[in-house]
Image (tube, rainbow over all chains, first blue to last red; front, side, top):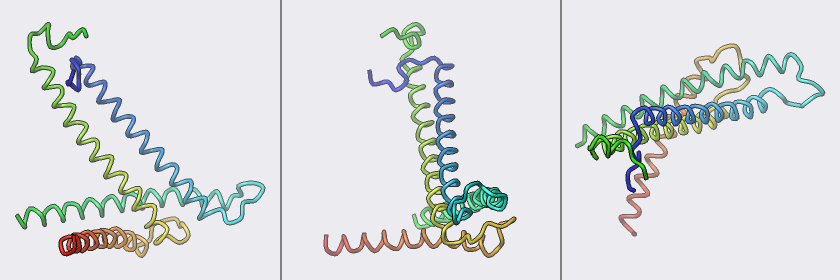
Length: 93
Length: 92
């Protein structure tokens, strides 16, 4: 059978689409979490001591917030650039 | 295979309509995922280039650096792609 949906009912189809969306969202969050941990560990823990001291904790908290700021800033820039390039292409046709 | 949708309602087009919808849906989600992956990658190396010590706010110097980092990376990518295509045309 070549059919992708193989005779799914419409509610089964909606459920499938929701599942796909959710799995993508989870994967995205995991990626962000992994990257943030790696980057903030690098920035904030110069010499790993016997415990995570309060200045290190403060640094990690700020680092997390800034990492997400940077993410948003980059998403905005990239979106604008894609739009610009798309306009260039349609302008040249 | 027991197939409720198409046979019992006598319309094969039901199933192909669902197919089209799903294909469309997956294409859009794939593009969104690629967009996100690209931002993760940008954030990865632009963070290393631009952010010094994390402070209580993203200062304007850092923000400008991030914006430039993304735009210049795309410039380099376009330049290399175009020149590579030219080289292929000439010698390929």
